[in-house]
Length: 160
Image 1 (cartoon, rainbow, N blue to C red):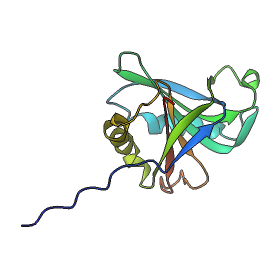
Image 2: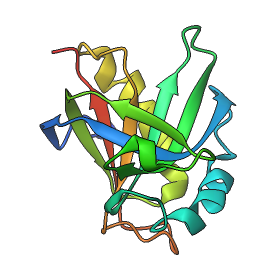
Image 3: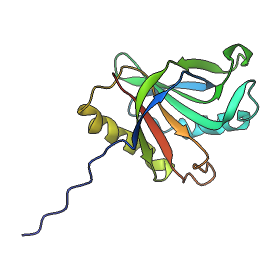
Image 4: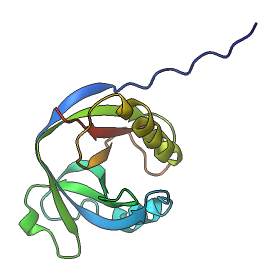
């Protein structure tokens, strides 16, 4: 009798503590099941990268803030800044407090990122206690925005 192999259990790459992060960028609201306009949001934000007052480094962040009713979310495409008061009024600024995170790595093409996040929340996150706090995507120097390849870290907030 032939049985298909079980899929590999999804686990974080590591557990990490993050200092406070102040992120400035473009923010939009989306329905929970309709994130397809996020790439266009990144396209609008991309020309600002490297030109934001107080920008720290070249890492970009996609911050997901869930709604209380679970029917939608706010998404902020942004960069870390050292001082929120220097940021132009056309940008949204949020500060994520210090927190412990489970860090996952999506090595596939960016077009499969949403599916990967859904898998994290529907499998792994059902077995642990996550915090009711924003989670974020971290696009470091491994990610190539021209090709959509290279990988993205997903930081899931832990309750403790």
